[in-house]
Length: 232
Image (cartoon, rainbow, N blue to C red):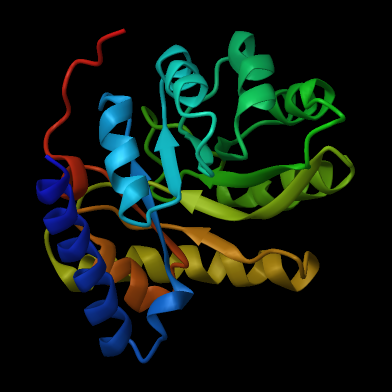
């Protein structure tokens, strides 16, 4: 099984390297986040053995079980996606990053519930870049206010933006929306110079995201295969 994971990781890293070269960027300027949700802790362990350090999860109970099982490994855990208010304490206590903050209530709860013994929780504001009513994320006009609120808390660290655009088949169409996201990212950097992360691009569109300036791509299917039902 680890051989299979090795082959898939090599393929994804190859795609990132090629996309960076074509965009005139250094491959190390783009971080790979392995989205391990619904996949077992053993799959995470295999990729960790191969040098992967950052992993993304979306289901809190499943994630905490993996984090606990793999506690001795130097893994950087990212929570991705919508956040329920009743899950903020668990997220604040167990994760290193949160990608998906889109409203002030969640900012306050994460800030209040982050244990003082932990390093500040790294925060990415999720933007609903296509204004899809069914999708989480704030309106672009709300980024500045959320960023200012996050910056007020010592237990949080504003790192940048993330988005999940609507699926597009054409590279040019994909890049157009990522270009809009990159412009918002640059605006945020102008007022918050510590901002250094734009999380954009997944298995189907990472090349366009990198061409537009993404610094982190979130890849699940291309690394792990199709989602499976996670078992306790």
